[in-house]
Image 1: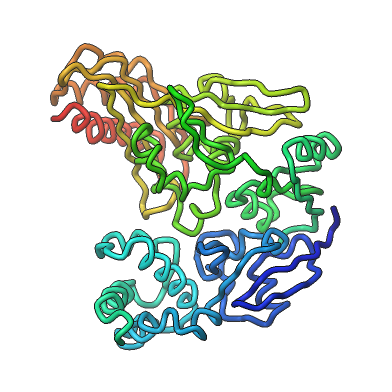
Image 2: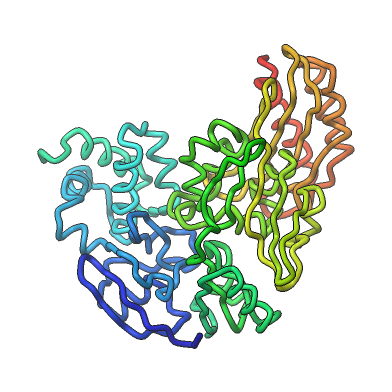
Length: 159
Length: 285
């Protein structure tokens, strides 16, 4: 037990080992230690969803999870899922439908929607809104985002 | 903001966690899902010296059928409760409540036991535990003990869990034939804390209520049961007249606080609205 923790985890498919201050949260670790600045930091108390990342196959709040807790975990960030083309149709639909303006919420929004499309592939517009209710967008009013989810579902991997 | 520095200890067994708590006393906090704790640390509303992480302890997570009840391990994530067939089949009140807890990313991490042990008066699960007569399983260095939900919630964020103890699980009696449950909350946005909410369960003979129990959340310093109002239902069916009687009774029986979202009188009014919206459909009206 220490003020520092040694951790080894997989980030975007690559193994990393670091010594971190125990109080370091996962999103700060990704941004400052690994330079993966695609995950954003907004409210730092779990409300805004900008820091959403995927840990062991599920989205989590990067600000409410300690880096020390990610020992042995498999973490994916927006950089990783962009590079693997996993969310390509969704990203194209976001562009097509102009589902972002400033883009601050977009990485968290995309990872959240990726999980929605896996867990509830037939979600209604209302259910889409519910699922992304923990991701704040202060630009779009969400209409275009919900549209983009529907477009991405229709076009799927063919886009 | 960033949390103040703390030491981090990963407990590998329950005994390990209990020893760490015994060693560090009030300076230590248990880290379960962390979805409330981490936020308070980030805002520096609390600054413990040591966090005892219980996420890696085997056997603290999972939902088991124990015959007449389901035992939900303290570290069971909300999202696993949400998708559990056992919960859907035997604890429909919990199934109805769980997807009102915050948002998907928080439900992936937040735990059933954490919500019960934290005892936020605005939280869904403590009210459900009261309505269902759940039993809380608490471990200490001297062994395990069980506390019924009715004796568990002692005040604002206060429970029967003593210093040095850990909540290990909650047993929920399976819903019996003829019983129905109802759940609803009013929030300005999906996933926000409820302005007020209701967890209800009753036994039905046709459309006649029996053994009704109503528990409100965010209506006081802990989940608030309203036995006098519930008693009005027993032996009766649903009617507009009944809705008015319940609303009037709730205004006498509840004493909800004022806050920025609603004042006490508004909460009392909404309690009646929720009773009407939940109990009518339960009776098939």
